Image (cartoon, rainbow, N blue to C red; front, side, top):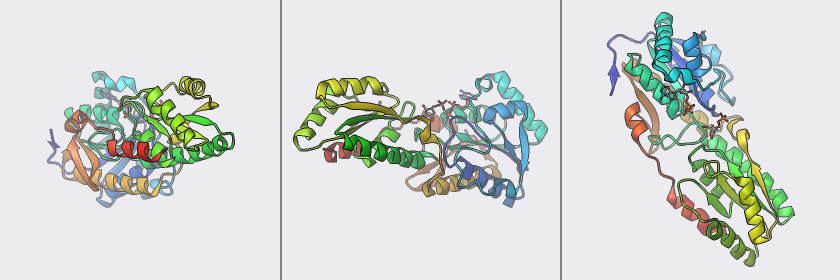
Length: 328
Ligand code: ADP
Ligand code: F6P
């Protein structure tokens, strides 16, 4: 569904919601400045839908977003707000928007955030979603803001683990984030030279895909190992214990955790965020709502939120095969 409004947009609200991601600030900056350049007033909303329900809004100007393009986290703060999932919560948020004069909303987050945007659009408030999550799990988009930075952070951490693992002829099982998706694990695992990468999307057998690969590589002279496991597979400490018993190689586990969500965004994340923020404002200026901005085949495009949420994203099997082939 494409919601088109006839009246010119006068005030845009912008919020960040769900898990924060490096580059969200660059998106907020792009939305704010693109809108102001079009003569549109911008209101920042703190803590996602929570702030929308409680009226935690403030007027933004060109300088409100100075010096944030390179900052991690989100200056608008983020939150998960179960109350907003109820019709009552959505009505409350709509009333706040009406009384603040917000006639278009940009929501930066993941698929939960887009469901909220879709609900508000259905109530008559045009909303645009921008994918911001380190998980890269938005099916409609090849890329989500924060993924590149998180993958680079994970690789940097794994390189450090590799130093100590190599010094002791050990194996380390490293667990990375990704919720139910294995994209972060696959990219970090390939870039960090992991012997095995376990992701929820691809069935695996630990004896065949980890233990046997390690023993084979051991025979070929390899002395230390990194095994990458996605959070969606989990159980890194149990896996480390099992691998240690089966291979006789001392094995440790490290769960990288929230370190992957912080830090200055990479150039890629800043650029994509800037493009997506500007595109979101263009859509609202054309009177278009209920869309999600996506990055598809190196182009910035948009889909209806409903269509985007119905899509399925598979993992890159070629990358997976490549990692298996060259990590020996
Ligand atoms: P993400 O946006 O990263 O997927 P969440 O799934 O936590 O993160 O969703 C963020 C917020 O979006 C939730 O806290 C809630 O306020 C809102 N939300 C999630 N699902 C829905 C839904 N089905 N309807 C309305 N709002 C939703
Ligand atoms: O969606 C981003 C993400 O970091 C996931 O990778 C992870 O599963 C989840 O958020 C962690 O959420 P929280 O910050 O609430 O622990």
